[in-house]
Length: 146
Image (cartoon, rainbow, N blue to C red; front, side):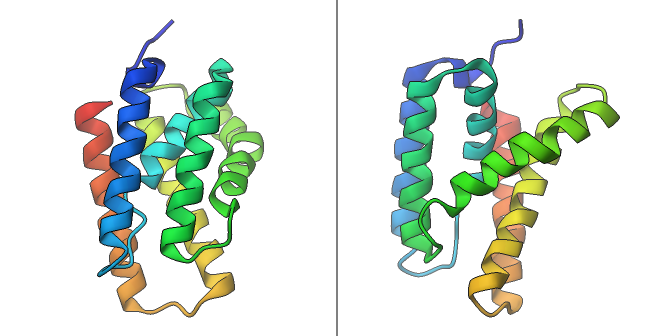
């Protein structure tokens, strides 16, 4: 069985605190949902391995991010659950498991965030540039630390 840093509850709790702090500070000046893609991978792994206490902390972190960014409460959690139940099994059937699939999961999560954001607000180039920056930050952070 493959182990990663999300199996360590101390790392997960520290990561959640960092993500909440960064999103709280950055929401003052920018339109960012920083590190939400990495939290989605944590959500996926916690559901897959049945770490329900860790999952509850990830849902709380999603709630803080949603409140700071202006999204509806629990929309990121519902998006993550939808991706886990319907999209990820299809991807796992078509792509043999490799380390690249977690990067695909992050990109699909942000595509879902774009769809959710387009339902409630107007999309402009500032939003798309923020999403591209968030994807790059998440992919780099995920590749280096997780």
